[in-house]
Image (cartoon, rainbow over all chains, first blue to last red; front, side, top):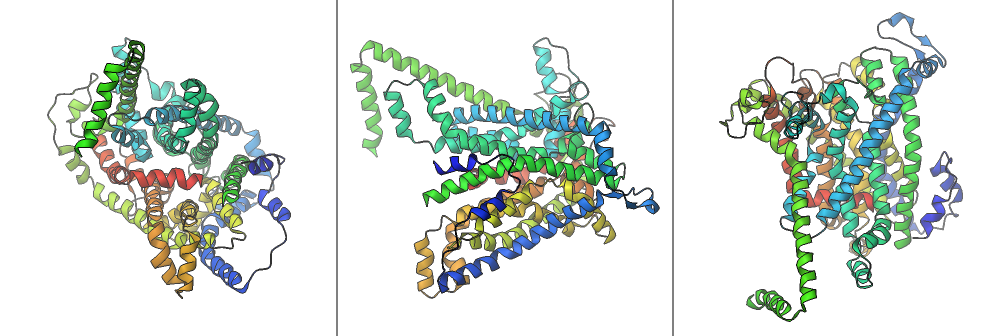
Amino acid sequence: MTAPDLIVAEPAHDPAPAASRTLRRPPKPELSAGQKKALRLARTLVWPAIVVAILVTQIPFLVTIYYSFQNWNLMRPGSRGFAGFDNYVTVFTGGAFMQSLSATVVITGSSIVLSVLIGLGIALLLNRKFFGQGLARTLVITPFLMMPAAAALIFKWSMLDANVGMVNWGLSVLGVDPVQWNTDFPALTVIMVLTWQYTPFMMLILLAGLQSQSKETLEAASVDGAGPIRSFLHMTLPHLRQYIELAVLLGGIMLLQVFDPIAIMTRGTGGTKTLSYLLYERAFVGLEIGEAAAYGVITVLLTIVVASVALRLLFKIFSSEGAKS
Amino acid sequence: MSTATATPVSTAARASTTAPPRRRAKRMRHRATSTALTIFTWIVTLGFFFPVAWMVFTAFKTEAAAATRTPTIFTALSLDRFVEVLDRGFGVYLINSLTASVMSTVIVLLLAIPAAYGLSIRPIIKSTDALFFFISTRFMPIAAAIIPIYLLLQGLGMLDNITALSVLYVGMNLPLAVWMMRSFFSEVPLEIVEAAQIDGANFFTELVRVVMPIVAPGIAAAALICFIFAWNEYFLASLLTSTMARTTPPFLGSFVDGRGQFLAVLSAASTLAVLPVVLAGWLAQKRLVTGLAMGAIK
């Protein structure tokens, strides 16, 4: 567990972690004939998957970069041509981008924080022996299995509707007037659905972390007089760190691309126009291919910022695994 | 059997008679806390599950009973809403979803099993680089690739085509599958593989006879997760399909037209749409947990 700390200490702005690792790799050891054969086999087996991944994801992205330098609106087919950085200038000078960026940060950020916190709470509750433990876990993971489109619709109409929604009925029992969630608090509405759907996912990862903690250590701490809160803060939480990071990372990857609840519940109104929804609107409603492609490229660049932090973390996990074996 | 059941009773009896009063009070308090925690856990659990339960319950109501301000609990229940949903051609969308999910999952497995095996063959050189490549494709928002894909499919006349959609789902799920399965493959003990090689088993028999049974649970978990992601996918499906190849999520999204009462029929459609994945997820819960959490951690 000491080796990973060396990797974390790398400069944070390192743009290509893979390349820098190649440089630091020790000289190749001489391989026996059998090992060479095994290596050739390994490469043959991996290649088809790599080729498919390149064809389906990487090449379209390269074309997107090309489009982002084109002046191209599908409504005016004749006027297509090289545009230089015009599309990027349009993106950064128009007000839509900054609004969209803040919407993305608010929605993604709050959904992650809320679902990790609630997920941790539920994981702690489910990690003890109690009546109906298995059934409770089954019920709790259900929101994650729900089709997002169905979840968004059920929340919009059945839970949060101003007239017949269950949440407003619950509030009316408490004497609170009905709230127009969907029109008055659109961002909150989206965050509620996302938190509901992603909490089980976070919970599963954190529960796995809790269950991998050695019981003997906790018992020893309890014998030594450490209360439940102290042993949680000083032992469980540090142990869970790696799991929390992973939960945040995986949740972040999925939530940054989130589209369904926005398209279904708010259509991008009231501070819910995230980058992926804005791109969809520019490309498929405004038919501005060049400008939409520029949004796509920028979205990827932003994701790389998140991803480079994430990759570092994953590398840390891989290298600690390597140290073990 | 009798001794096993008798032991806890006798220890409990001994404890309650011999323990000093203060100890007993402490134990009582401990038990009260434990019961309170259990009740709290169940309140949270049922609160979390409530929207799903309410959706299923509403699906069996009449529209009038579903659209009341104060929820109706005691009301006539029927399957009429499900019949209504199926009359609107819902079956076709379910079949399209099934086709896309199964087709993409099978292709993902065909590509990912050899790749994951290849990545776990020793000596591992550059395997982390290949692995990083797969993970990094997963980081890329689908939005960055959608425009050229849309224009290409439009040019080829392949919009509204279930095969085209399935191929894109392969691209979406492949990295995840490779990543998860690799962790299961690397758990195969080296001795087993070497023994198979000494026996003269060639690569294919080795993979099928020796390695596959060990990693089968991991493959099942990866397959289930790929299936779930494909079944639930909305963005690509809503952009790339219209009538023939329309899958369930975009159909659901356009289900509400705002005219008349629709809550019960919407609930019925949603129930049908989520049923396959929720049931599969419940049944294969252990695998799902292993696949998601352990596959991701290791």
